[in-house]
Length: 107
Image 1 (spheres, rainbow, N blue to C red):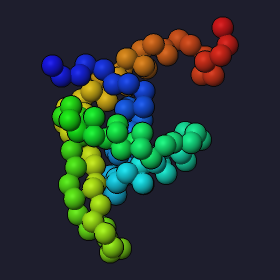
Image 2 (image 1 turned 60 degrees about the vertical axis):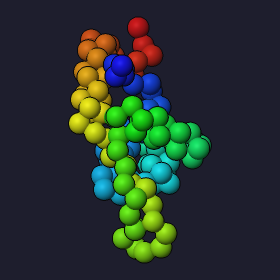
Image 3 (image 1 turned 180 degrees about the vertical axis):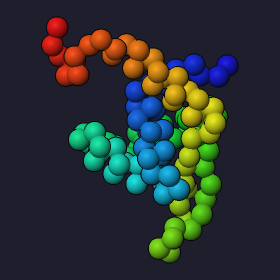
Image 4 (image 1 turned 120 degrees about the vertical axis):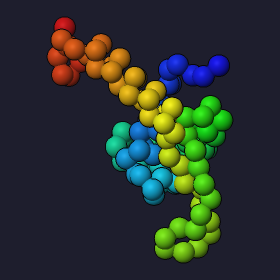
């Protein structure tokens, strides 16, 4: 059965792959997540999430040489199913946020 929702961390990882485009390999994804979220991210957690997303058909990867040379790296990107699920998740969150103050903490 295909996933119908994304967990928060999986969603963050897929968003990072989307933001990075063709340069989305695990170490770059960790750096992107830490920079954008301001939180420490365990590289192993990203690797596990990427494998889970790939196993679920929401991401795909290929092994290739990095542009600057060196060891081959596994680069990731969301699949069409992953992009669809990301979009559905975004719409749900935006609908829930509608009418609330931007800060979220005020009532």
